[in-house]
Image (cartoon, rainbow, N blue to C red; front, side, top):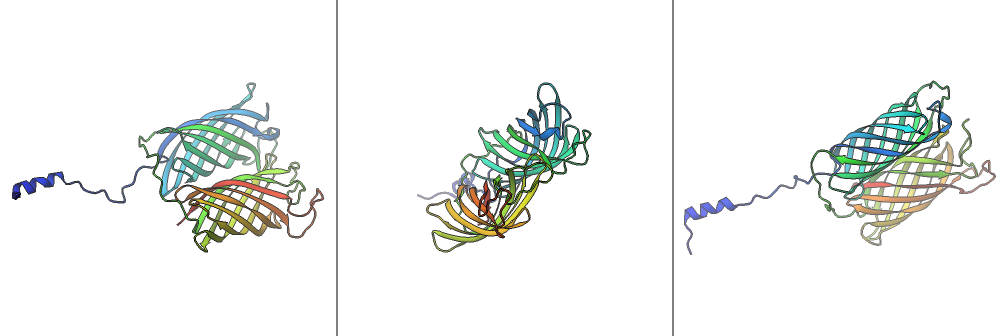
Length: 345
């Protein structure tokens, strides 16, 4: 059946153009947000506050802005203001913080943050690691851990030139830009080959004091640790991966003791199924300025495309074999961390 030119021309009215590939759905962690904060805060020996309890409850709020800077990577800035109280006395904590984070699942963001402000009677700095996970179209739940230190002398005279307070903070955030991101925009999982970088947090335990020193603020067997990592993996075949990795971490307790460790590790992993890689690791480095070796391993699990969650446990020992103050030798110091890794493949 013949179609007239007019009819053919009319059919063009029903043409549906195709969207270009550079038009992508919005990210949940994108734009303006605000929320509430709550949790315990500890200022050891009243290093900040002049009276009242060392450990108090803290409540307050925050407002901030997130800006995606690459697929799965977000940078931002945030203002926090809280009041810590033991119901007999209170003090204010107000901080301006910068953030950088990786998606770890299509609904979860893991981020590192740091900044400065005011706490109780002193100018202060703080740094830490946090995570948020989406629970509704506009709301996310949050958990943060941060170490806080004094900037300059404080009025009560208890001057500590390092981290002397700690907060573990929960919260709820609301996205205010109105965009609703899809829940299940999952790209293919990483194959664990190529370059990667990440963030982690955890703890160090040194029962024999092989590495930890008394810095004039008391002895502690354990510390919190926060840091970064970067490395490269090579695919030996469909299932085997081998690579090298560098780790740089800062460790602290609430007495003002602070240290660092840097490790260079060789790794061998197995990929038994898509998105999963258990691995073994070994290497050398410096812990608290002392030459050390490390033995251990971990596991990575891809929850969202190129981003994985990681858990790792290492045993550390002194290369010189010198006994610690506790009398022990060998790999008796442990480093256990969790974090997120971004694979650039």
